[in-house]
Image (cartoon, rainbow, N blue to C red; front, top):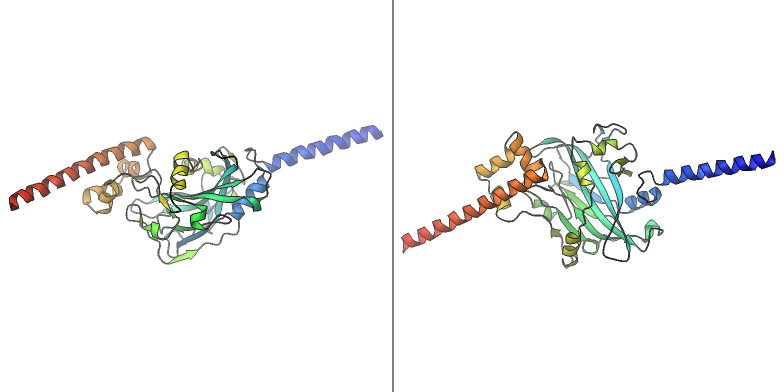
Length: 323
């Protein structure tokens, strides 16, 4: 009987150990969930938002719902921690911070507005405690994959944010993210960072990995918004190379070649119509798929070149007349 009791006890202990191991890595990414939570807390950015923002505060969403459903607009911030490979002997993890809004209030307003900031952190190995990790690079998404893309990035050293979160400026109504108040003016003329206030979230909620949600964040993969696409890595080899050459400056990334944004900023009715038009044309320009955006971008670049040629010919014609 005694041997049976010891065997039963051993089986019970092994079962509990197995359950504990599962609980430590709920999103099955090979990272300890406790370390993930500690890193998310350590590098949580300081978010500055417009005090008169049309949507109030970032929203908390109903856990377990497949459809993104707002529970409360209370300034909740969600997080994600993933492995990242970089050309270094150190270990890198990519942390994402999502400020999720119930709506975008810009000229082409729409429901559900997922925005994010990310940071690449490093340590000697995965066994190191959160206190040993340092932020190498920061990235702030602003109108990603649109003609108004103003996404920006910088080294942790440049932002003086190697051991803690960076300060992030969120444009009123549009909710684009910027690593400086000055950068907030970039894009297509709608970004404003005035009369700002600090968000003070109580904690960060880890949403896990794409397809393997944590804390009831099954709404992350919904096709009703673009959050799933934002859960991919932000720090490509090209981005890292640009940051290494940036001389500790905040770098603007993915900006369409001139004169695309200049034409949109100019207020010309033709180009204003492109971003304020209703229906599929407007949606394709600002929120459509990558293929549609690439085609639209190429078309506008050709149009811009043509306009520049026309302008040059007009100047030459006027010069000839004066002579």
